Image (cartoon, rainbow, N blue to C red; front, side):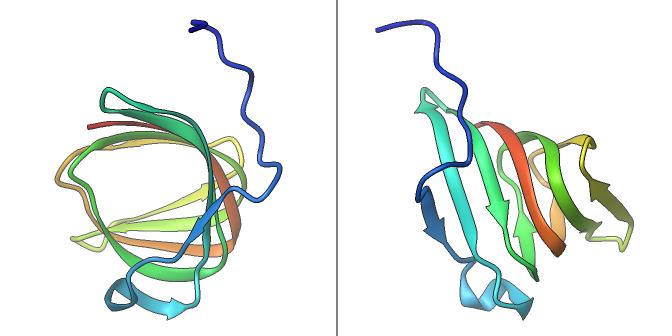
Length: 113
């Protein structure tokens, strides 16, 4: 097995899913994921979501870099952060709140369980 992977790009069908219905607060968000790595507690690739708002709760660490779009993350205390292309951030285990996609958003991500 090679230690080098080709860059992942959001091409082809990807894996498509929606958030659980009980988490959706507005819209009909659809997620598409193009995975680069999924093993040993490490997950990384590209994720895209269409407009909508849903509840989120993290048990893992996630680093993200927004590639395109416009989203708003709101924590459980109501603090908001607006995310646009070029923004990077990290979510720690225990984070909960909402993710609202205003304009279809694409991000690079790295998750560590």
